[in-house]
Length: 121
Image 1 (spheres, rainbow, N blue to C red):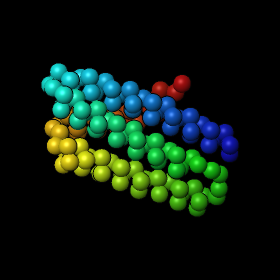
Image 2: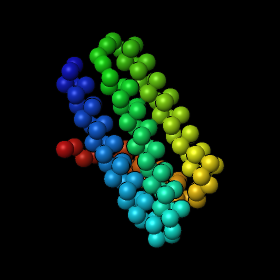
Image 3: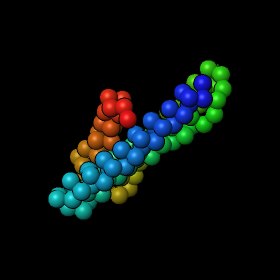
Image 4: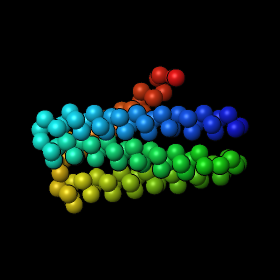
């Protein structure tokens, strides 16, 4: 059981680091369109990394039974959605950054999840 928890933490750490790298790359890629586009793309991918880190911290916090583990995961998912929706609202409504780069950064950040399970390291 401890090995599964350690493996989950290790994978979550790798995914968050990869999402942070993708956030920087997305920001640099959109820097050709100007500073607002670069900030929007970076912010979109960054909120995915923050949300994933919150989910992982909550889900892999301690051992317990199936019910406790499910509840920690469920609370982590709720926190994740709050961060995603709040972060996008902050980027699009409060800071008035361009929506297309923000969504592109968001999608790029989530694309890491797809590839994280393909390559084991």
